[in-house]
Length: 464
Image (cartoon, rainbow, N blue to C red; front, side, top):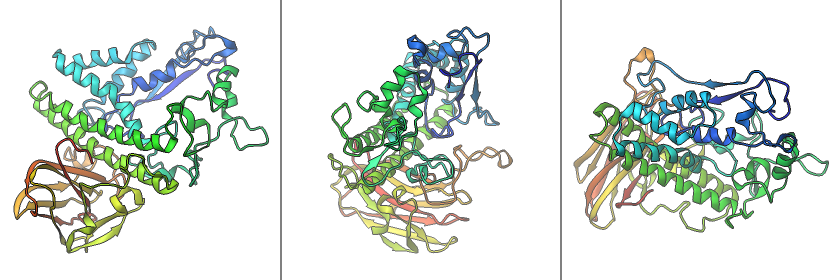
């Protein structure tokens, strides 16, 4: 559009809130993403035509230009619901003064203004933030297929099948053999939308030809087989598998990095952000598993690394000895490990899930996957040989002014067992001997029947 209306004053709208990018519960620093748009060369009349020079009026000698930002400033004390999300609002303001500014330099100025001058604080938050958008894209959607969030419900968790067959359009056109949207020029012989032809000739030629389309936009412009090889030599579906595992692993690292700042950031902000990083680490695995399981099921193509569907450290809740719990088929199926969870037999009862642990003696982390539904606050207790390991309340509801400041996370809530409500809690440094008995007691509350998905018994360094 910017290339085709040279006599019109134009402005760029950017989404500063993270509506489709983790809703501030996932760290995603956005200026590097915006930079890919601002520095894009549209090559109007075969001349340099950077988007940032068009929106200032410079390229076409227009008198006006500008930008608009969609912001979710609210009544939360952090403005945007997360201490680190404010870097996006600050970044937008800085870019609006100078669109050629470097996102990393902007970020570091913000860190100094917000957290002080400690070099380790600056370096750590810089690395976390600069890695955050690539990580989120890796564990949500790749190769131009866009984020595969649920566009029909809360826009927070995974639901790839919601992208097609709805009243808002078609995005993935995925079936058992092919994936991607053909946006090439309609020529009477194909089914392209012709979107690529709206670009000036040089850019059009690049995107029209699958050989010159960058891999990171392949599925935005072309409908291809899952087995199509990327320029890296890896197939489309294998890239999906690899990227999702890599992205989730990066998100685990954010927890350790943030923990290294203990004592260098005030206790309140340290704890509040640590809570979000722990949540992101768990939810990134929800995302990872949902997407790889969905496309593995759809394509029937195995992961060459043998990871998809293979979880040697997990105990599925439905395989445990159950008392007061019943099996529940989760929808979408890919948002539960093995597509099945357990719920209490009524919404006012208690259930017990018990399993014998057949792992070598050692120290492990216990990661328990469960669902946190809006409208209830189930209670959970975890025991090892009848000794308490820990307990928690399933109550991650968003902050609502009329309810006060109690709830801690800010994503749109869900009343279903799905990719929005799925989450994990981890108890580190649990000493286990082979043959020990693990017991989880869940007490339902409100509409929430103490839902459980699985337990992962994780050795040091293992992500699952």
